[in-house]
Image (cartoon, rainbow, N blue to C red):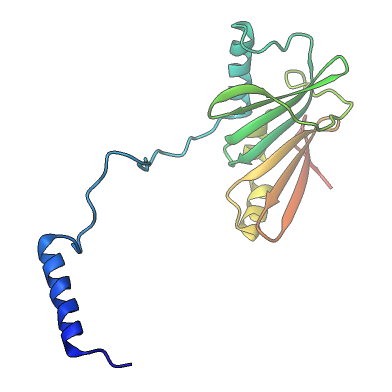
Length: 189
């Protein structure tokens, strides 16, 4: 199909006219006052478990969360850096036979509905166990090579089963787990 030269000339004239009037401006559109404006905020640093538990104690005293009469049976740390700061902590509590989960992140502590069972053994954080940040500092030479092999910048931590820390290091394709005694920090083979 052949387009007559007059039609092409008319289209070219319309484009030139629109560009001169601003209809086809090649510059970026002006900022509008509505819509979503992206805000670049720094990534929160996270909390160590010691800091998170201190905040939980304050919240409990102030009446924010009632944990009186509960026993701790599991601690989970998500995306924990080698200095012990986690993106989120979760604590599994038993209140009699009832299972309760508390989670802590950038918004603080809150009770979360999580249908996950808890180990029978109680975790004694104040008696014999070292906090995760101490374990990570002491065992960095063991943990760091696995992180480098998997190109991971954080780990996940589980504390349960009679005082055993399990460190899970994940990549997109693989995962490695390391276990340590929580009271001494020794590697469990």
